[in-house]
Image (cartoon, rainbow, N blue to C red; front, side, top):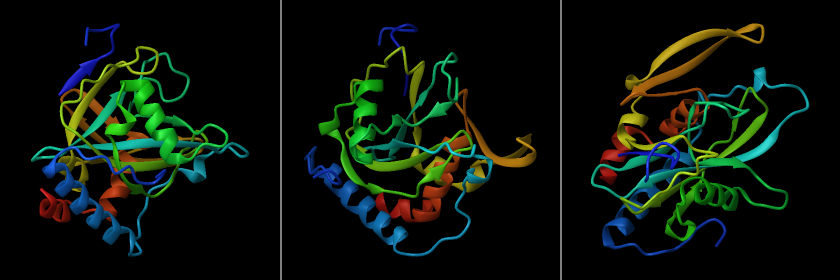
Length: 225
């Protein structure tokens, strides 16, 4: 499923217990169990760009990993406009800076609503996963949640050029990713990359997905589906 911005085409704070049918309850409960199980153990190999971050800049941000309630669950992703200051043209999760006094969950839900008109009351939040420090000075808190399928989303042209949905199992399977290197800020930086239906998923988004895959494996996900 792919959507474009209108400019291109016409188109408790930690847990929101909103019912959207029996199957969503099953998906939510089973994915929650996998999430808790994965975060109860220590893992190695979590990715971070902290060593590339500019000294003195660490802006709190939050993103929503919105898993769609389907037999084969998907993840809603956006493509940022190419004229944005930070990460122009890149594929991203809905999200942005955390406002003063705001919690990560509230920020992620607010941003998703602003960017895609994704109703915050439609999200059943599972929890917060590993923070990711970007090389551009953001400390990103990913928020995992479940949403109904086929929501009528509408992209804000100021923040979103296009949006699409990619299969969760595909994203969590490490063998589907290519590892590349680039010389950046005086050192070699390794990053993951995947092409999905013409969208290049890499950088921060790819790293957050890779970190989540260390908590919820594709094999564990199959127990959910």
